[in-house]
Image (tube, rainbow, N blue to C red; front, side):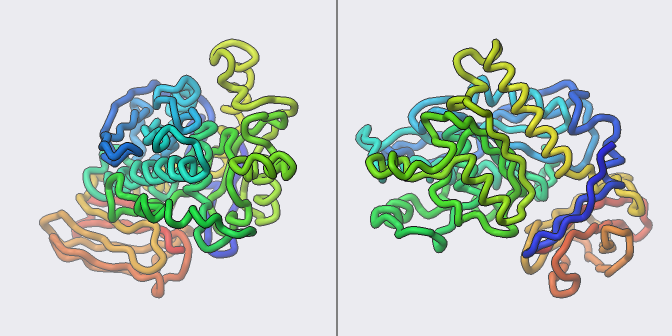
Amino acid sequence: MRKIYPVLCLSFFVFFFSDLQAQCNNGRYYDKIFAQSTSTVTFGNAMQFDSSYVDLKMDIYQPTGDNFAHRPLLLFAFPGSFTAGTRLSPDIIQLCDNFSKRGYVCASIDYRLGFEGGSDCDTNQFKALMRGVQDMKAAVRYFYKDAQTTNTFRIDTNQIFIGGSSAGAFIALNYAYGKEDTLSRSEPDWARPALDSLGGPEGNSGNLGYASKVKGVIDLCGGIADTVWIMPGDPILVGVHGTADATVSCYFDSVYASTHPESLLFGGGDIKNRLGQMNLPHSLYLFQGADHVPYILPIPFLPPASAYMDSTVWIVRDFLYQNVVCDSALISGVDDVVNEIPVSVFPNPSDEVINIFSHYDNDLTADVFSVEGKLLARKFVVAKSSQSILKQELGAGIYLVRISDLRNSLSKVERIVFY
């Protein structure tokens, strides 16, 4: 059994514990031990390039019979050059099927497609990309909202991974690493007005007011406009890219880019190099001699595509297995969940304050523990009111909060993060 050890990531703490991993020694997150169920929800409504509005839906794949209170989420976007495609794309279905059966909650999302006037000029391509980013953020915010309200999907918001294939990978990369104030070359004069016209990076696709922070990226043959965006403390990454990719170059090609402005992009090879320089946890495998998205073309379920898909799944599986933790409610030294108390803990993660809001009729206590099980603070939460936990009281890091009624007959454990 592989062990996971504490890691200190420059600007914030991310802890991975061997005792947590031992709780998953039944094969969870590594082997396909679950059956699967699916459902479809609407997570937003947004204006398309032609000024019409469209509902945005996602298919959610869950492991059946899973009783964990806090589960990691893998959220995927489909390929299609921002002009075509569907959340039922065969490669995305394959990924959601593989990982939901391993214990993850997976989601395949809609995002808006198309260019104004049918023109694929630089401005319109950029705007199509940013609509996708906005829509993926709305989908992530949907799960933050759910976690803080009905908790239908029991997502651990500290363990959300976004990703996709080709165009979907572009969306995830720009979501996770895009920075408006950090560029290695001059910003195109059309970029800022185009972004402002869409409402900025967050947009208004849905679930505004909730967090959109993610832990990691699953990059399948994507590219990014500037690798200098990738900084210490940014999301971790796993992915694949073909070295002979003729659609999204694995490495920046300055000669080609000089006559094809839309190819001013950095692919998987460049991203891998940058991640190594930043000492960010990553695993980006380069398929030698492979073209674009080799795991889905020409036929998803027959060689050679099926072999590439198998390899892609194993690469992603192994990295995630080393970088997710099991349910915090099962951590040794902190009581297991007895009967869930109706409380919301938000925003989580936070860089300043986290609030505990009680929907319960009786007063509660909230005990804050270190990950080693040491009691650090005790808070009292009056019935139907809120209580705050401040970063300045604890410092940056991961903590466990056990919320109980005064008789300890009901309890709930939440993992909180201060950056």
